[in-house]
Image (cartoon, rainbow, N blue to C red; front, side, top):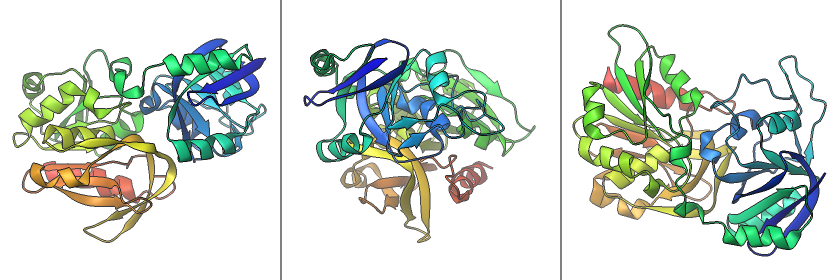
Length: 358
């Protein structure tokens, strides 16, 4: 089946399509990981995005369903050089092509992903349109250019839970209220392994509603899009700072900064992959981290918000962690629960915040 990918700058690439036919439009981004594709495709933070894998062959060990980070594929579409049609793994239930089709999503293979990655690094993340069942490049370019930029789209409402739900821990353990901006299942699992009690609430939950739950701590989750779109969560941070300890992961890191008066900005092409080096400024330890974000906290804006930088990315110096100077507020930009090989980031973050609350 023919397929065409058109970018807003006029670039057109053609390949073989799979999955659902028709057109999808979104922001074209790349990730450098070559394993963990099952986790990436089901990560709610990829909502609204067409995902390129830079590694040329994706799907070698198939899809098991055991590593899903949500209830299904959240990335809009998949772009690969080659997709493995006959995976080999004892847990594999289907190929990545079969998975994409079953999820009602679309993909394109047989394209020059290296060229697309270099173009994205040089020009920045761009709007794109993928049409499966067509080779009309002009139509793909038109659709890409007409699509809104990601900052204009409310993606959080499409991935947050509709109603609160609870995950019971041990009696007497702290109660964490998780603000679901698109939370990954592995974040909840990391908390649950520490026996705490968890209540997950929608992104629109108001400060008084959170206080009614009698939390010992609040965790602002990861999620997709521009942090400025998380208006309710930003207000919640500003209202409850100093009343309840507040922690954040990824988008939650940016929301905490905004809620306390700091600023954020869009990165040129974002950080997406499983090998981002992050230095902890307090201990001097360098962590290898898994990341997925297109925005970052402006370090120059932190001083007026009584926040300090605790960790930095060693590739580009961007902020990877912040803490309040005197309140119990702590957050990281990367995904500590993902532990891409080493487990040190999970212990560093989750052990620390649970110990602080206890």
